Length: 616
Image (cartoon, rainbow, N blue to C red; front, side, top):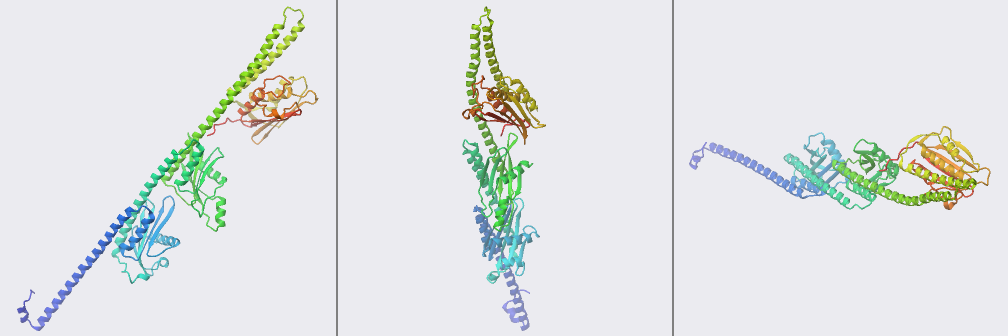
């Protein structure tokens, strides 16, 4: 039907007019419905535009945040602002090197324990849904969650970044107490809520990466500062390195233990005041052994020190193991020590943490090398001073001990009258010549013994100590016209290895002195020799009842060219050579004596000679 004019209406009957009126009302109703639909669409679009504007505003503000706590607070506030909710909650869990949980809530207060319980509920239930799924809860659902947050309606979701091991849980909604003041949680906000969760995850990842970069830069600059601050003492520098290791890795305890040292460079910060770590030397030894025997470059061990366990039990706390990250410190292909970083929690080191540990371990190795070089320099200087001193004494004494007999021989030869028929006087002179020659020969032999010991290497072989002692005594028993008895107490089946010629020299020198300095006024002069094995040592004890040595001279008897008695001739080299030989055989010699009663020389030798390796 077309448009009716006033004239047309006048021609219509009453029934036709009523029909036209009803048709017009129907058209108006349809128009109103279309108009309302358009208004609803406009309102929905306006609402979505507002939400997206607020999300964009959130992105701008989040980009400016540098601390996690401030960022999470912004997220909780934005959940309320963007979606017109009464409450907003965000929880972030991370499992990089150790588990951590952070959260912020607006519109409702939570205790830490309640936040952890909510996390466990969300984590356990949302695991059944795909990442990003948005759930809507009404009153009467999830009683465990309702007991913690008395909600009327909630919307919740989870966003996960598997690469960084980060999960973000977001909750927004209306409490029972505010149900009448807020619009119902409708489906139209679900998509936007899920999208917002992904934005939050993206922003959080960016924040974490920025903090990692900042942390890496700080760590490297901190290490550089420590290196630049090194002093001349390698030991002090190693201490600084254990300090910085504890600081940069945020650990509770850090130690460095050399494999061949009793020194322990350690640092304990006890950052976790609730459960600080206490380590004894036995714990250090345990960890050192574990790390040293590990085939991994960076090893991880879990250990409970007894004192640590006892203290936690006494406080009524749960006993948990702490974790130690270990690294061998290698120098020129050899392990010199162990670096250990201990944590009160189940920390898992990141790749960057392992790199930092490797840098610090390498720096310790360099300081160990410097320490070794310094020790060698000190030893070389001490050895050089000793050699120079001995050389001065050697030149003086040798020139005296060799020249004096030569001058005596020269004078005696001048007195000998080869034309005289009386040979008795000449025989006396020749006897004195022979005595001077013997003195020269003895001096030269001792010089040769000293030279051989310094120059020749050790040649270990089986030692028959009874044979060595007996032969030595038979060679020197006529050095005195006074009778001296030899008494032997040699352990049965005593076997050990050492350098036989050197040991012959030592035993012969000591026994010769016992014979030379025996007391002629007594009838029972003796030399007692006892030899036995104790653990890994051979002990050789040579005792006599001769003249003895005064207390003033006792500490000098091993000095070069020192002679404690003038009762017989000698160079004073014998006991000095004995001490040098014993030292070269990795042993030691001790003396005790009482003037007028006798002396005891005790020699300690390893049962199996092994060349000493340079300590690192």
